[in-house]
Image (cartoon, rainbow, N blue to C red; front, side, top):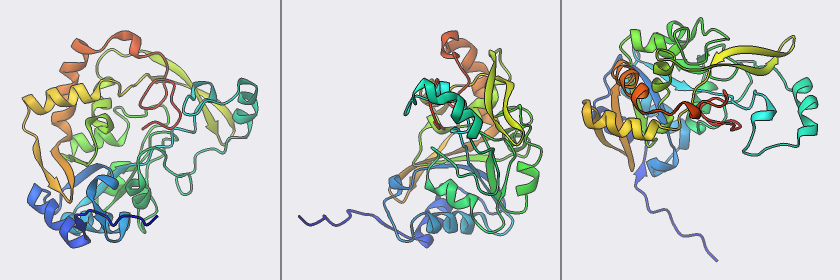
Length: 278
C-alpha cells in the first residue's frame, strides 16, 4: 500500500520568513516562540528551515528564544506518562544524570526548540527543569541568572523578556504552551511545595512555587477576546503574536478569579503529576 503524497502547503525558509513578516514580526525584536512543526504544513528542510526562517525575519539584531524544558529530571513519584513501578523510584533518584545545559535534551516542547538548543551560538539557561535557549545579540541577557529555585518566576528568563519588551509567537501552538502565564502564578498567591531532582552532588530537594497550565487554554481565550492579539497564518499554522507583558498582566488579574486551589497538588512542570509535560 503506497503512502499518499503530502497535501501541503509546501513551506520553505523563504515563505516562512515572508509569512512571519506579514504577521508583524519585526527585525531586531526579541521573540519567545512556542511552536508545532506538524502544524506548519510540509516544510522543506524541517525544523532547520523553520529556525532559519525565524532568524531571517528577526534579522541580525533580533533574538530568538524558545523553551527547552527537561521535565523528566524530576521525582519519579510524580510521573504518569508513563508511570514507573514504585520499587524503581530509589534507583532512579540515585542514578538520574544531573542537568547539563550543553547536553541535556529538551522534552515535550517539540523539535523546533531542540533545534535551537543545538544551533551554533545558542545559549541556554541554568534551571534543570524549565530552561530556555536563545540565539541573537540579547541571548545572554535573557538566559543568564536563571535561579535554580525559580522555574518561571522573577529570576527566570520570563521576567527578563517581560522587562525587555519581548513578544510571544504562538506558531501552530495553543495557549496551553504559553509559559508567560506562569510568571503571573508567581505574582498571585500560589502554594509552595518541595520538589526533588538530581544535582551534581546527588538527589536534592528544593522549595518551589507550584505551577500548572491546566486552565491556560481558557485563560488564552479570554485574553484574546479582551486584549489586542495579532492573528494570522504562517504556512498552514494558526499564529498569534502579542507582548509578554500583556499576557502576564492579564493572567495576574484572571487567575485569582478562575483557578480552583485543588489544581495545585504537586509541582510537576506545567501540570499535575506528569512526566516531561511542558
